[in-house]
Length: 236
Image 1 (cartoon, rainbow, N blue to C red):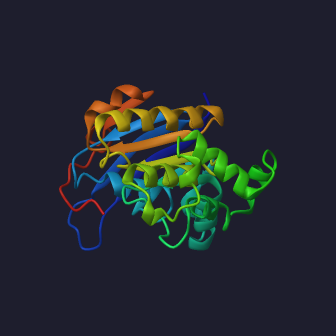
Image 2 (spheres, rainbow, N blue to C red):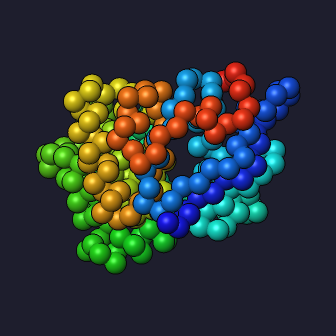
């Protein structure tokens, strides 16, 4: 299989920290692969996701995305690269409260010409694709024009997921997206997410503190298995 993402000798240390939080010698993610990453709070899970997204910079090492070294780019170039090639699902969802569901989903294309082009290559317009994604994720039609503040937590999660999928990024990064869901809703959500990822050959890195979810993924790791630094700190 072809690597989508490859990490080599990646070391990260917070300023003034005596010990590195992360040292990952080797890790890779294949195209269209689903990988689960588990670990307790403070183990560095979210820090690793921010490194993959180019939000943070390492002390040393490389992250190559489709062969490109993310850290060879300027900060502005990393921002654009992240917008073009990645989608994020956050635990807190990060939706804009004064917009409705469709408007929040379309935001994914506001800063990415590439995602916009992908959408328009198969849909009539951005709104039509946003509506398709929301309906595929089982959001009722009467709810897709509501402001997100009028939606339940589970409904907001579907909006955040549709936004991450908008424009078919090569990689979805999901950071504790199911922590507020009950077991039945969580399983239904995973099934819908996997279906959309498989449809468009999207890779998925899914982070959670719940090891029971690992069985549903192609590969499952505890962060300590790939992180050679066993450091205790704040997982920011």
